[in-house]
Image (tube, rainbow, N blue to C red; front, side, top):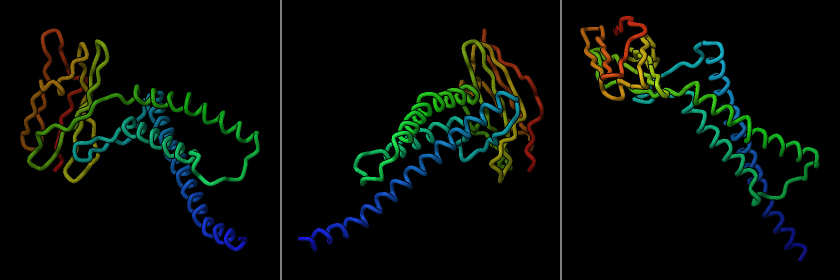
Length: 222
């Protein structure tokens, strides 16, 4: 009987070790993602607070990764991994002191109920634009990217260019709109290429005008 129990314990030990390793990996990955989310929120706060450009906007296909589009998946996946690490099917672990357990519980409550929601709300406010790549390309392959935002009776946006062989968006123009009108989403714009220079015009509607804040030339370098 003793030999049988010893054999069973020996067989179970590797399985328990693998389970504890998986637990550690889940927790480490979860905390890395939560840290990434908080870092993205901090970047959004610094950009808004000090009016500086810290985040480099890039174009991959027709997708522009933004602070908000990266933060909320990191939060959900990070919390999911931490929750998996707390499920009861894991092998028994050494008991932690009661004080440490209380501190961990309070810290997690503050993180989930206060810090992460504040970070996500702030990022959604600071980085709330909608991005799109216009279908009209230059002969050399330059692409125009627009960022539009609207809220209640106000709106506006920016226009950038991506040079051939690059993914970096170079913002060159800004516009404003009444009543939250979004000319690119509505399709009330025109874009024609005259060689390397883009002729981009935006149009409003009756009672909802749009106008350029800046009208710098949009040049395709190649």
